[in-house]
Amino acid sequence: MLNIDSIKNGIVIDHIKAGKGISIFNYLGLDKAEFPVALIMNANSKKHGKKDIIKIENDIDIDFTILGLIDPNITITIIENEVSKEKVSLNLPKEVENVLECKNPRCITSIEKDIPQQFYLVDEDNREYRCKYCDEAYTKELL
Image (cartoon, rainbow, N blue to C red):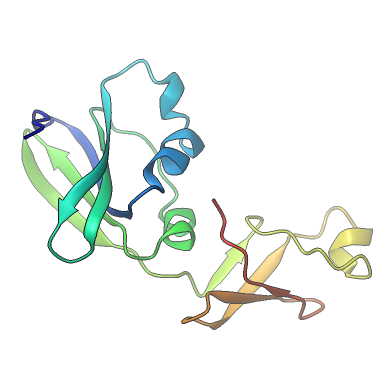
C-alpha cells in the first residue's frame, strides 16, 4: 500500500472526485510549488469508491468558493503541528463573481468590460447557474 507521510503544517484537500485532482493541482499552481506537495490519485474511499487527495506542506491561500464550484464534495483540513485544527466541508456556492463568464453576446457584461460577471445558483442537482444580468444559463464544469 502507498504511504504518504503526514504533514506538520499545511492543508489536505480530500474527497476530490477521482481524476479531478490533477486539474485542481494545476489550477492551484502546485506544479510550480517550491514546498512539499503530494497528489494522490485513485485512493480507496469507502464513500465514493475512489478519490483523489492533495496534501500541501505549506499555508497557502485557497479560494474555497472556487473549489466548491469545481467539486462540492471536497473537504479541506487545516493542519497545525501535525494536528487537524479545522475541517471545512464545501458546498456549491449560492453566488459566484468573476469565476464564470457569460457567453451571451448581448449581455451587458459582454459590452461593458468593467461590470463583474455575477452568477447565482438555480439548480443544485444539475449545477446550473444563471447570469445575474441576462439570465443566461451556465452548467459546464469549471475544470
